[in-house]
Length: 297
Image (cartoon, rainbow, N blue to C red; front, side):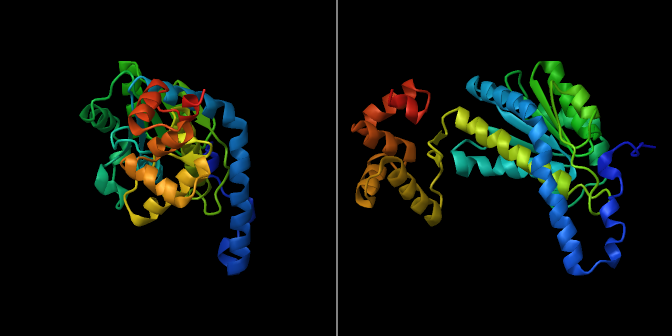
């Protein structure tokens, strides 16, 4: 039997012992109050998140990948964050990968027993040809999911960097990873339901890991998504607004430069800021490893 007694995520919340007797507004109020504690709980682990982001940037710069591994809600959050990177930052679908115990079907329907299989994680990483220059981020609210432990152990064995994101202190995955991130979110409003505060904490941390890592490799100029993909009308409009905001030109000039640059937002911005043609802008961006601001220096 697994001992859950020491896990704060499994304990009963003293403020919701009568949850089933509360009015709807009372229940919502206490839930909102508990949720407000999550962002504050992350503050003490910012140095660990900083270390993880630095490692992710290094992996990207060595042509490596960011690979999230998790089960259940944690796994779904990793898959979601990975899926959002291509449209937001213009990365390939292979650059940020989300693996969930039980495979893709587990994203919408639980696959019984999958999270308890360490060897399955190793095989999943072998299937995507995990390499030494990749970085593996293991996600588990409990901090003890065997699937995640198996993934981290295999990644360590081949020399890849490893990060663990857990919502309990002294977690098993934290002991395995080279960079443990352990945030204490406390007992859930609904006892043991880690899709609540624990999942919120993991989502916030994933936001930090992917977003600030992308900033670090030049996917952002000022606070603008200069590598976003214009795959629909909304994003085409956003691309135009980004070019205008970054360069302070009018919409007609922005449209013209986007057209000259083949719809590439970063290229259009660089052309305008340097007052040059597309080929020259491409060359300057290549020399600066894709950082718009460095082309201006």
